[in-house]
Length: 243
Image 1 (tube, rainbow, N blue to C red):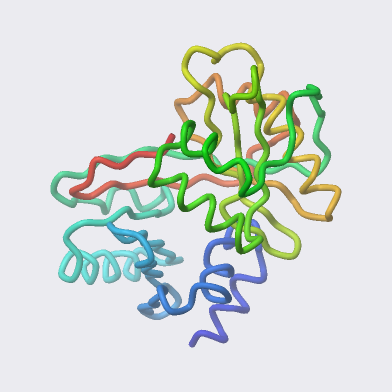
Image 2 (image 1 turned 180 degrees about the horizontal axis):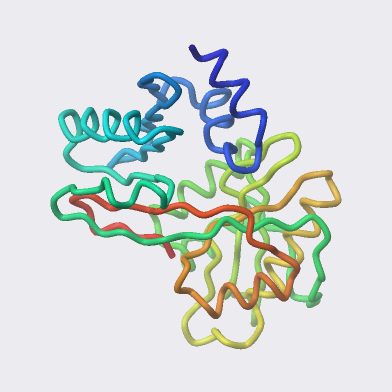
């Protein structure tokens, strides 16, 4: 069944980037449960687990959701909007997201933007905090992420990095600017220069953004990102939500 799923994933590497990456590089944390043409991909490297549901037919989506309800109590679910009417988990919060892509960015250069490395450890901790900072540093040490940051007075005030990178696709995440420096175009420069780096290496740059985050969507469109697909981020019994 996994070989059939891999064939499905390769039909659309942008949409199925996480499935491809987890199956190839994080297999020990990844579990698939299949029903007919659909699946649940349960990723347990973090808690609560991240779960992706894919189904073409309503009967398949219903059965997968029933399985999930019986076996998991706390999780973040990613599901297509067309199945929203089937969602009835307790303590559920739904955040619609847009997947955007770019292969020819407009670049807004600043001299104080550069690529980040493990030598920037303390500044990464100062911006992202210890928990997420450690994740970023581990990815940097394993050469599994590309991160860019903007410095003012030698302090990191805005940054972004790739969650995952495949041969031809990269997913950007962690776009963050210190509150006192927001609305100054800093993230525009950081994301555009990161996107330029990725596309020069032959990758389609992609990112997820909340449907109601109009300022961020405006910035991404300015760089050259266009809507590609939509999904729902469903938080069940957690306080987690997308940026």
